[in-house]
Image (tube, one colour):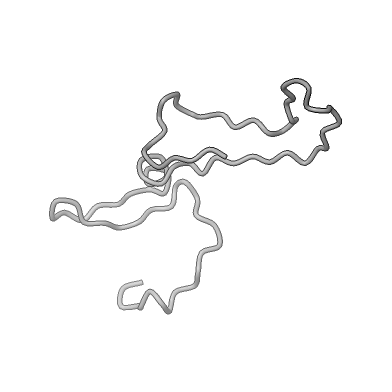
Amino acid sequence: MPGTKISALTAATVVNAGDQFALVQSGASKAVTASVLRSSYIGAGLASAATVAVSAAYAADTYLAGSAITIPVAGNCRVGTQYV
């Protein structure tokens, strides 16, 4: 939409991996996908949550079903990565 102010555009509710964004790199106009931005700069936004109750008295390590988070590439955590 040439000539349209960004503030006049409809807001996106979801960004898909294949969505493209314009950028200027070394003086040349190029496109980058959301997938590249996410994997290279933002991170994949890994998340998980367990909704089950724990009945053990914590006398031993207890796995909460559904709470696993798999790191896609081992050792690929960046400075500032937090795991809580």
